[in-house]
Structure formats: structure tokens, C-alpha cells
Amino acid sequence: PMHRRLALLALSKTHQFSIIEDDYDHEFHYESNPIPPLASLPNSENVVHIGSMSKVFAPALRLGYIVSDTQFIKRAAQEIVLIDRQGNTITEHVISDLMESGEVKRHIRKVRREYKERRNHTAQEFTRVFGDKISFLLPTGGLAIWVDISKLIEGRDLSDFKNNDSTLSTLFAVDQKALTHIRFGYGAISTIEITKSIQKLAQALIK
Image (cartoon, rainbow, N blue to C red; front, side, top):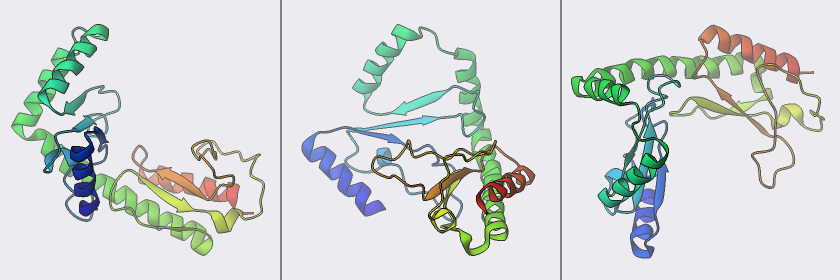
């Protein structure tokens, strides 16, 4: 929320700590305009905003950017030169031309509509296939949905879970011993593939 962002920036200025802002899904908000990034707000002198063109265009486009204080940018450039003296100049110029022509904005509007359709289809199919056995909040943005499967798997041992489309793991949790949610990504698959994947997941989870 905006008030927490402003409070964080005020703390950063008072105590002089840096904030690394990775706003990876800023372009993909479906219900309203996205909250402005920290780097664009007052007291953002200590913010290092990082981003990538990979999700806007394609994962193979390994082109990122930094928005920050001029001195930090210069120091970062010095470090980068140690591992990559030239970069990909042609790609950088092409993306620059696309941005100046407005093509990037047009492309983002197009893919935002596509991802919103996939999000809505994902929610519809989870509800159709699983009914009230699961629950979720429809995300306002991003490329994935978190689904609460705690009622479905209560008391079950899923150590032998096998599904080519899904992996169940608690490796990303610090203190959680039991699975409660799954994260379903819909950014890289079609609506037909979404339906098939959810159906396969149901076959593996519903006993």
C-alpha cells in the first residue's frame, strides 16, 4: 500500500539504508493502474530500482536496467565492465528505438490483455475442477495465482506426489512443515494448456 511505501522511504532517508526494488510485474496489473514504484516517489534517493525486459518480451532477451543515484550507476557500470566489457549493443539499440517509437507501450497493452485472460481462465478452471475443495484470492496483477489446498490435503502424506506439471516442496518456507498452498504460473502456457494442467493436478490431489 502507498502509505507503507512512503513510510519505508522515510525510514530509508532517516537511517540511510538502501532499498533494492525488484518490481518485476509492474506492467501486469489488470484491475487498476499500478502503484507507482518507490523510485518515482519522494525521498527515494536510496532506492535502487531494477527491472528486466524478459517478461515484457521474451525470457531469452537478457536485458535489464537500473534506476538509481548517478554515482551508484557509475559504480555499477565499473563493476559490470569486469565481467562484460561490451554487453549486447545491438539489442540495446533495438529496444531503445522500440521504446522511443511507442512500440513497447503498445506491446505491453497487448500482452496485459492476454495475461488477464489467462488469469481469469485459470481462476475459472480451478473453481470448475476443484469446487470448494480449494480457495484463492484473484490476483490483481502478476503472472501466477496462489491456491490454498490445505483442506484438500489435510492429514495426507504427499511425499510420493508425482506430476510432470507440478512440484510440491516446502524448501521455500522457513518454519512451515506442512504444505498449504501451491503457486500456479499461467504466464508461459495457453488457456488449453492451463485447463489440462489443472485437470492433471486434480487427478493427483483428489483421492
